[in-house]
Image 1 (cartoon, rainbow, N blue to C red):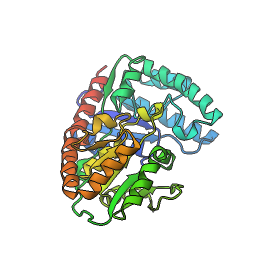
Image 2: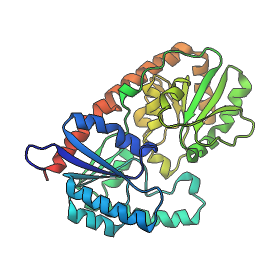
Image 3: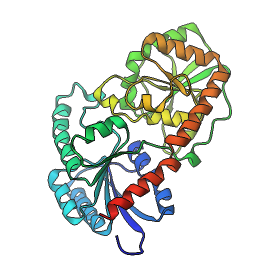
Image 4: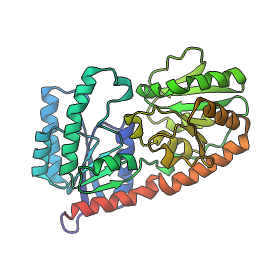
Length: 347
């Protein structure tokens, strides 16, 4: 760090801002870090890899590493040789991640090539853990894994910018909207609870299910409303829901999920019904901000209760918003990130 100058941080991100992981973990923090005296630059990993894009990326990454006081690798599992070159240029490296990167995604469990690819990725991931000055994990589960290899691990949960998440004001009476927003590869999480949704629809016509994604689900016997996801429209989608859904399969990948969906729901004042897997149990207070359902019967019970009881939906939503303000907002967590980056810059 140069005396008297702003701390320079180079973020080498896995994606650009169109993908939630990099947007939530890096892009949404930029304005807040700048206000606290940081100068930040971002280099997303190329969407398409060719010889030209590889060389251009390597040169840009090395230039940024020389420029920066701290280099943050956001979910970017680099080859050992590439990491070595970056570290020789700037040894003050922080690795940030919000997924169980050592585990094959649920949608690819039967893909043998994915299995091989993740074996290699796991080796590289562990190598990065051992060489980073600090690892930032999005949940305690992820942190516990990283602690097997890293010298220092901190937890900063995925967070929302409260300025961008106004509370929902208008609530549906009939029908009540059960909503889900997410990537199409995560629609497999609905498989265990599809019988519960069918039963709810059989019992009442006072609800409908809304899915916001880039591809619609393929569900038999379950009517739903689909809306195409577009960048920058999350609040509009969330405000169209009355209850937030977050089912999860009990897999290693899901245990490493950071429950950002639940955080989004709670931020706008929605009650949440979720599977008690991964960070969901850290984010949702059962019976206060929503419910954690462990069986088909409980999914039906909790959703039926919320559909029938608007005051309970409102009460849980307010409690959820307050919890997000305290623990899962950028306003609460940006100072923690800034403090950590300052410490690493002084090494």
